[in-house]
Image (tube, rainbow, N blue to C red; front, side, top):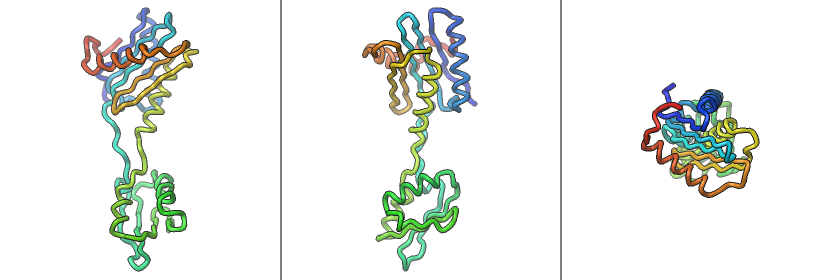
Length: 204
């Protein structure tokens, strides 16, 4: 596990900052996020009922295509079939859902646990389409884990929340009160600070 480049938690009471930092470290470990996060900056202002978090990810995880985990070849030419042989069964349910949606269940036959035959109209065109078909977007699950981490680190009762993930930049704001546009703007300013590492150091 690579250490975080920046891990800064600010509160008015240093002891509270250390406690929140410890909680966030535990949550990151529980959710297997430590390797995904490069920089994190949190400001907690209980007197204003405000929790703000800005994160820079180490990089955006790539989309998973059919060809990443299976071999796609021409099957029975006479029946205009394409055969998909899985090297990794982890994505089988997602693959089947995508194939059913595009070709219909009647044309997608699971021959055995690792082999799927698809009846198509144009083998040459469809074999490329199946190879390049996006089966899984890890960014979706990454976003849900980031939001869960932020919620678990937020003080009790802060149920008004905002979050955004843009490329490798994540912002989370929570409060007991109605969300204010300036709080979100401050979250973007926090991102700018950790992008430049402006005097933040690497710890609390």
